[in-house]
Amino acid sequence: MKCPYCGHLNNKVIDSRLNKDKTITRRRRACGKCDQRFTTYERIEVMLPMLIKKDGRREAWDRGKIVTGLEKACEKRPVSLADIDRFVDAIEGRLQDFGGKEVPTSKVGEWVMEALPELDEVAYVRFASVYRQFKDVNEFMDELKGFLEDKDNPHT
Image 1 (spheres, helix red, strand yellow):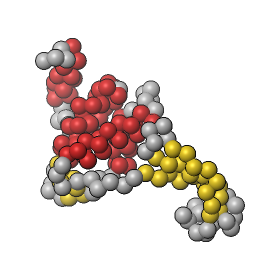
Image 2: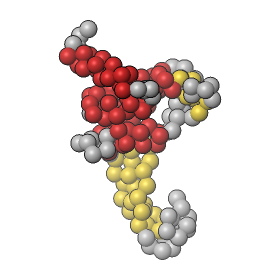
Image 3: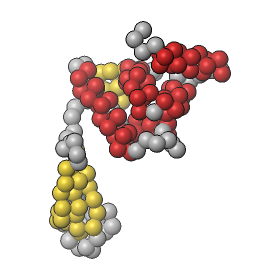
Image 4: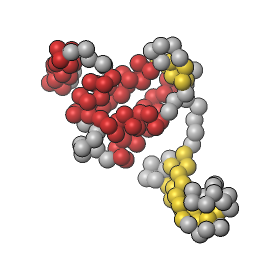
């Protein structure tokens, strides 16, 4: 592991800990040259399907993109980074279970839209306004009405 301070490759692990889900290993390291300490995170890399964009391009899954989108949607809301990480873990789990080699981004977007109200309803509205690309206020209001109806009648 390259030291982020001096670029030296020789370092030692001082401490290792698993997160509570036992899916990520956090390692504290010390550089053998400059003695600076830094933290690395290790997670299992699984082969996820390629994403098919609206314009037909294929793109590899990028966890950072969905995390960034959710952070924006959850800005100034009582949603922790750990909550967002768990949410994205669940989406990645659905991608793993999908079974195909490719999945449309629209499918992933729908999974996010289905689950987001449980994370935060305001974040859902914010995410929907970007994801659905409303052309006017009426489209936005229709989405809100549908959301409120689904919320009031969860078994329909």
